[in-house]
Length: 319
Image (cartoon, rainbow, N blue to C red; front, side, top):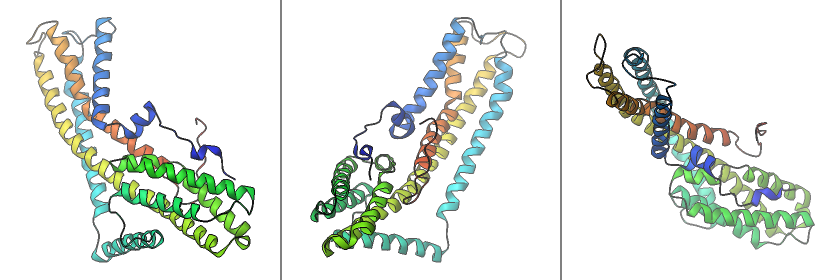
């Protein structure tokens, strides 16, 4: 029925930090530092040159300047994308609110709570804890060996996820814990148990399985909703930081261009010119570094939450 891997404890690693959980400012700074380090090594070894006879001046005044303006235009386009999602007529906004309230009402009813937490981490912890309580309240082990295996694995999965989610303090951290396909596999397994052994279990067990299935559905819905919020927040931050860093990089480009005289030579000598130019390039690539760091996370979240419900997209060959 279920693969043992759905309940394993995987703490991720460097790849997860870069793609999801890592601080985007730290990743951006790391990219900029790496660019500066590479340029410094290539310059010291004589592979490239940023001195007086190099093409740095023409590169700064033409290609880089136009590229930075393009990046700033991209930031404005991202802002338009975000605004298109938050605007709506009163009827549309009312429908969204009613749908959210109905979703919360179902979870509250099953959990036996008068209200549910508004914080995503606490809400998902409530869902996982309720599934754990429901699945352990009734006994399926006497029906068939596979039902007992399903029951124990689902209890272990939800108990582990409940504790993990409580320790997260932001939306991306929550999403990181529920990006896998386990909920879909347990959803299919719950339906299998219902259809295969529904007549052989007690009424309380049947009711409990119905509650578990509804809560697993709520995980799928919450995952997509939290994904939307997380991506909108990241895109909003991205457009703002690209605008900030783009302006800084554009001013740096102008300053570096003006360091070189119109004919030949520069207003500062060597090796100061090389050091200033290499550090300046670190500032110039910062808008691109910001774009890369945020797009990596947005694309990763979108990829691993592409499916809603029990259909799991096939894994890529590289995995």
